[in-house]
Image (cartoon, rainbow, N blue to C red; front, side, top):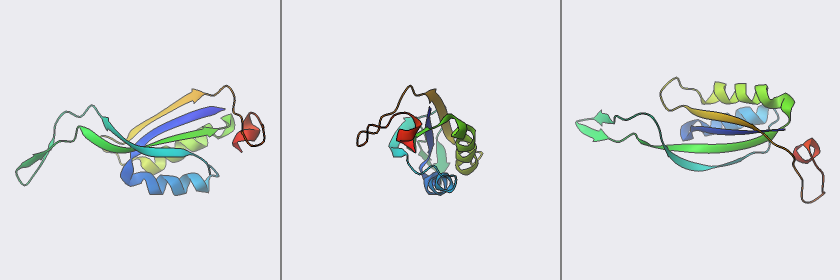
Length: 112
């Protein structure tokens, strides 16, 4: 099992959510997050400088079986990428076990 953590633009979340559902990733957690990126300069609009260092993002956590990792990552990239600075990051880590509390099922049975 793998844990995929994705930090994406908040504006791309609805498209990403629909795309994940279309590949049968139906359960994941998410919340709003604010972060600071590498971009150090602000943007100027009509003579007023706006800070772009505090960036509104959506943080997703997805637990999946190993065979769905590449499909899930490809979907995340395809639907969250704009090509601009600040598109986000994806982290993948191993999960030792998973237990469904209601039924005591373990492993991939507990996440499907």
